[in-house]
Length: 440
Ligand SMILES: O=C(O)C1=C[C@@H](OP(=O)(O)O)[C@@H](O)[C@H](O)C1
Ligand SMILES: C=C(OP(=O)(O)O)C(=O)O
Image 1 (tube, helix red, strand yellow):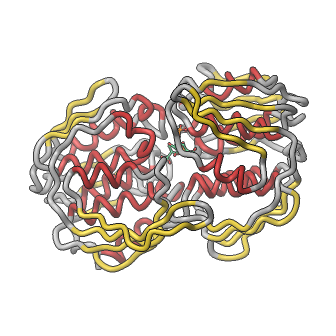
Image 2 (cartoon, protein in one colour):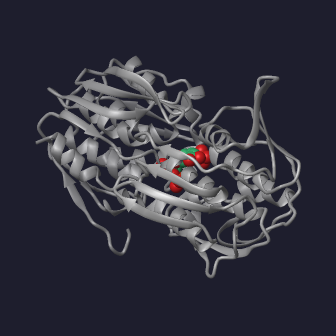
């Protein structure tokens, strides 16, 4: 457990009602700062997620010469240094708990004449970095990593870097984005081949910033070609609400009887929205109201009313479009009628915690019936009966485990003790306040 752990008991509550808005999308927030820093002139951002992960990216961009300023709630201004203009930071780049900061920043630094070390917390220091070290080494960067290709590590950027064609061996938007960001300051064309599509915010935003980027469908794969060393134009960015944060409220309102909750302004990019379809297939009542486009991303208000769920087999092909939502889906499955089977989720083992093992242990600790296999969980639901509850459940510095088990507490008999809620601040600082407000 974390030295400054903040335990909390989540007890059964009143139904979730009214209207809430979740904070800005974490992936888009990181990228707004990174790309804003690579443009010349002023990028203006509204709705930026002010979670610890994104603040780590903001601090890194400042340390490398960008002028990054908070103007108000979620409103930020970035005066960039231009493509290739990043400076040597004065000290190590601390990525905290954030895999996205770690991998995207390594990509950016890899094609600059910068030598710097990267550090992170105990969770990030266990996560694999070999997946970005490999392509960035092919581009000419050199690395001295901790055993197993882990943090802390030292990166010596290549200047000039070498353009590569890289086929992603793992479905990861972070690896794709690391190579593309390295490609920004690399002469020639950097190509990423993506056999399994992952979130496409980097491609959308690079285009929005004026990068020369083309996406083609070739032999069943997405092929992304970026021409390096062209200027980026500063942008006005409106960050939509994070569907991965909305997920906790979608599941909570579905499970708690009597709930009728509207979640405003949720990003519905098809590469992110897998959970909505899966919950609907289980019987959830989720209505998309006022579907619109905000800042180049589809957005909707979601009205979620309580509905009984039934277990299903989740198509493994959906995994990338809901990769961060599985912990809370497991909670929904634990309350469904019948069995839910998930497979193809080996990536969950290398997130902030091993999310298959952590969720299996946490759900079992509160009385759910779960079987864990190498790449998924099989969960036998209660058919709507509350789970017994109990704990304390171990969250292992993983915000999504903490929030998922908070939702489980709402539909338990005794409540659920979560050993540490402090990691919630990495992605959803006002989670507890929104939950209190919606259940009052
Ligand atoms: O690119 C991104 O912003 C992210 C990609 C995903 O990670 P992987 O690329 O490791 O799948 C996701 O789990 C993470 O929360 C954010
Ligand atoms: C996996 C996650 O984030 P990251 O990889 O940025 O730590 C997440 O937010 O669930």
